[in-house]
Length: 120
Image (cartoon, rainbow, N blue to C red; front, top):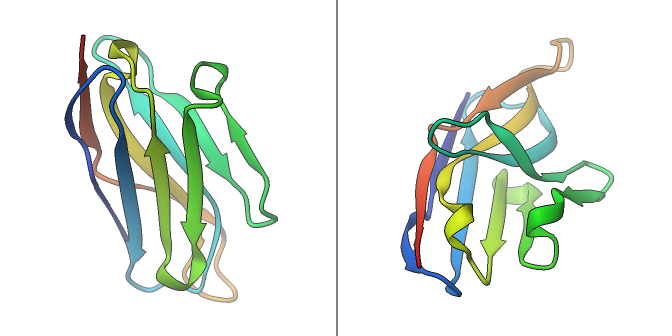
């Protein structure tokens, strides 16, 4: 199983970016999908979560600016980021809970990370 993230880049403050993360490989089912980020010298933090029941949660600092969505048919999760701020600068990682068969346990999988840099 692989998670391939894309969509990062350099943007000015106030701009927008859309991150994508596609899961591929031997996938039986996908549970929750999420985006985390890790700024230089800081711990990785949860940005947004999308559960299988359709519930979404966001960290307070991105509420109203970021939107997480998913396309179950494409095994893909997205993060639309608007009104970006310099403090959003970080490497963004996608995460998914995946089962590879009907009898396997759920496992966390991580994407490779995509850099988002917001200039002031």
